[in-house]
Amino acid sequence: MNWKMRGRVFGLVLLSVNFVAANASYSIGPAQAGASDPIITAQTRATAITVAEEQARTHLGSFLDYTLDDNGIARDNAAIKIVMSGYGGDDEVVWVSPFAMRDGRYVGILANEPKTTETKHVGDPVAFDAAQVRDWYFFGDDGKMYGSYTTRVMLTEMAPNTARQITQILSPTPVPAHW
Image (cartoon, rainbow, N blue to C red; front, side, top):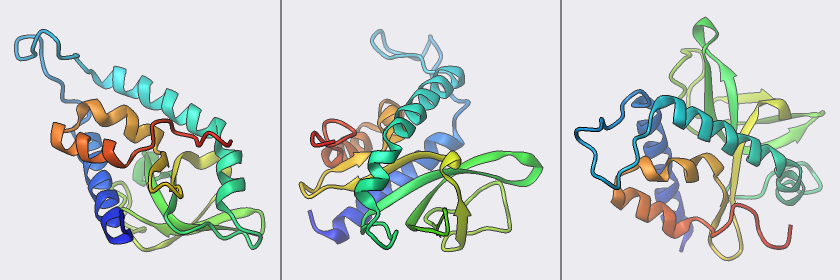
């Protein structure tokens, strides 16, 4: 898969994740659900996302070791998802790419538009620390996307065609076998 196609698919992932997040309180009620359809509530999603974020943070050190070069600059096609506060103290997770380590902190560029703040926009620089990291991803030499723990959780809530396209680029496991 060429880089242009990867960019398009990543854009689709971001749009899908933002759409699901924006409609987080919606769930199919029992009267509308099929017999085999899971009923997903906001609480179920929140728990699954929390577990996914914990799993991503478990492998954060390996991801950073693999992704950052000797100058602290992340390789191409790697991103990191951080939590930042918006207006009223509301937390929001946003993707940052590219990113690097500078003077013991991480810096990067917002890859998607924050919804809870008017002071930061897509393309703006941000500084953050490891405690703010919630997820990460990179494309391996095999062309597959590793990481993306939270995206993997939300696949069941996406439109089937969108989920199928994303599944095609996701690696079978979130971490490479050589970690």
